[in-house]
Amino acid sequence: MQRIAVIPGDGIGREVTAAAHTVLDAVAARHRLDLAYDEFDWSCERYTTEGAMMPPDGVDRLRPYDAILLGAVGWPGVPDHVSLWGLLIPIRRAFRQYVNLRPIRTFAGVASPLRDAASVDFVVVRENVEGEYSEIGGRLNRGFPDEFAVQESVFTRTGVTRIVDYALELARARRGYLTSATKSNGIVHTLVFWDEVVAERAAQTPDVRWDAEHIDALAAKLVLQPQRFDVIVASNLFGDILSDLAAAVAGSIGIAPSANLDPTRTHPSMFEPVHGSAPDIAGQGVANPVGAVWSAAMMLDHLGHPAAAADVQAAIEACLADPGTRTRDLGGTADTAGVVRALVAHLGG
Ligand code: NAD
Ligand code: IPM
Ligand code: MN
Image (cartoon, rainbow, N blue to C red):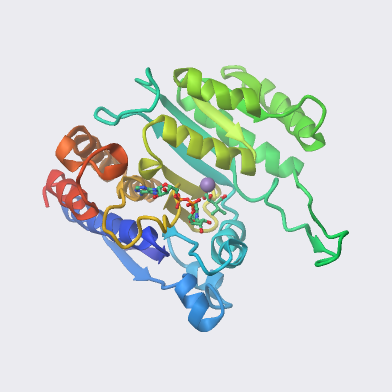
């Protein structure tokens, strides 16, 4: 038996996690998978009633699980820095989920805002535990004219090496082309260091071609020539921005998945859609569940069930190709429940 911790979180996180769970049940029945779930109500609602996003031993409670499925965290009324530092970020860090894998691809039936975005297929490999998201710094002199905020970026040789090595390996298994997102024109010291490590590691992997692109130019190229990318390795903040940009290029942030991986498999990895809790559409039953369902497929792959993952992927493709089962963000009229019914039907449920 494999045990999965489910944290639906806030807003549409709850709706899309329930959807993913239903699809997982359908694919598990078809492939005779033995998956057991425990649900955790850790959320902004919990913060409001109990004063904390999760219990003090929350991370330890998750430790025995084989994987974590998360919806989204954050809700108006609870400051984002409270909800995110109280739940999402500690899990990524405690479990050394240093790879945030974010595949982007176009689908038949999903219109891109770009004129020509056919056959886009690349992966953002985002560094997930250090970089710009550091705990070093803070706000000082609050309320005085000389008030200021400072946050150090932390790039360690270990941290940069392992993310670059992961990206090189992935590029080798794909089309053999790596792009490093940087800003190395000497201004940002941390990224000059990043570039040196990338160059050193890439030299050890001669069968992967690689380029460094400044983040500003890279953002433009992702819009103008998205087809040319294969694997993009990026720091925590750059990877965050590029992944929403890339998801939009492919049609909608509602379909983009992510895997927060501990590649050493010492700790559980966590699977969640790229999007957030979407307070603007929460509670209406119209959220696109595909990002969460695709994340669940990545989880199945990680748990050693590639055939089940491929079936979920095929169900997603069939569903997106049918105008009757596309949600509003994709220009359709289907609701979340309608998409789930179609996915389950494709899986023979
Ligand atoms: P968001 O991703 O929640 O929403 C951005 C826009 O995309 C909204 O218009 C929303 O309606 C739309 N959208 C997002 N997901 C969709 C889906 N599945 N189907 C259809 N439309 C969808 O980003 P935001 O508004 O910047 O953030 C809202 C809250 O979520 C904040 O509290 C933020 O901190 C949090 N957040 C959490 C995570 C996470 O837990 N991993 C990720 C991003 C944002
Ligand atoms: C994401 C989110 C988070 C991040 C936020 C909510 C902290 O935007 O998973 O992409 O920046 O990592
Ligand atoms: Mn993000």
